[in-house]
Length: 226
Length: 142
Image (cartoon, rainbow over all chains, first blue to last red; front, side, top):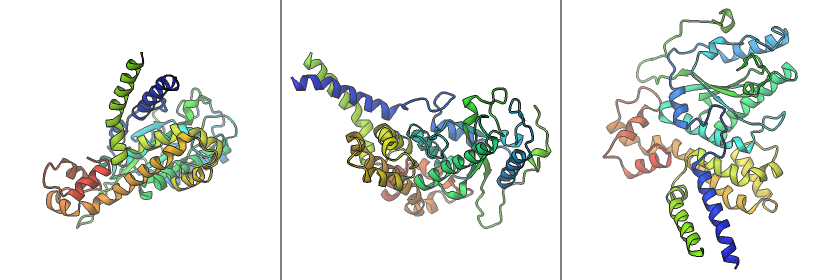
């Protein structure tokens, strides 16, 4: 009697367990489920090395928020159009409210990113984690929170998954780099971005340097095409 | 009826075992390990470790400290998940050393940038030593 009633349940949990290992528990990514291989392919597509300076980017964001420039979120221009031109993967990572603590349902996404960043094809690249928020609440708080969250993603990659700290940088751009500026409050705006910054060339014997990029010294000195 | 469900159970076990056994014996991807951790321990982490990030040592310590209130499923799985993450990370770091001889011998040309030696080693079909083969396997490169 007990055995009979337990068999189906046992079977169910076995099958469920099996499926959970093979299939992602839910679509953690907005644009269907992006495989680790797809991340590798996208992020390795760096054509022109970027001369984007992360410290400068951080400063620009702080300055714009402080100056209350572009005060209306609707159609707010990108802080850095240059950033948008680099190979980018958008990731939907959930955090506990108002904290940089990553929710368990996003662990698998982090694992998948770590798998991708550790693949041989990406070992020569450096990346920038961009934290963002939707345009609700106070701008300066959003900027600070997105920065802590980007740092939190970076910390997890480095401490838990042993990605070299030299390979990942982090910046928070709050609501200054909206994914969908026509809908500033849309949840899509809080997706983080993983952006390929540069490729490192090993100095073997000679002094081989990565080629210098010749465009856009400062991201804001250029107008975006759109 | 009973026989049918027992057969189905058997089929499920057989189907599941190839997927499970490498996870037990070798290493598994970060993605699979984190999926197990989230599935088995997500609720327990929310209940007991809400302020703790996915920081392996801290989260493991928190779950261990709260063993009494943590679900049986989580208790059964969390060590395995953290071990898998740790093993794979360590294996990736160890590849360079474990495959030093093979790199010099078979992939001397592929030293232009980080990762190219590993990409080369992965394609080598014969002549790799057992230590190097194991390291590449544990790292998930081969």
